[in-house]
Length: 154
Image 1 (tube, helix red, strand yellow):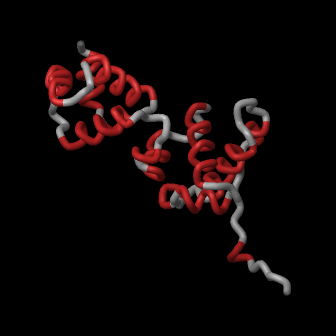
Image 2 (cartoon, one colour):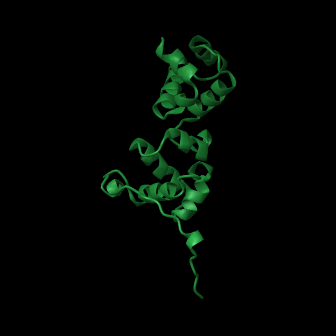
């Protein structure tokens, strides 16, 4: 059985060969980059499972490869967050994930109010500051600019 490819099935795209020379990119990161590049117009509508399937890898490998691509500044944090959501980002602690969810619902909260929340849980002020640092380090303040301003003003 042969599969015939028609001109409408073909898609031309260009991928920079620099991805093959970056020492921190393994084959999964390279393949993920190729899959995302080949889907430029609809990359934002891809799911992580689709990236994994097209790249012939597990979903976990696709998530890790996207994290590597972010570190190498080859894809934006925003695309990653849209595709996997904050709860599949295994770089974040549960404290950071909970704090992110809380801050999304209470966008006008102040830093002192956040720190006072430590009285309502087993978390101390240091834990909340550590969770905020995680969120900033992994690009989650991009969607919460008021929180970034708040944290850096103190």
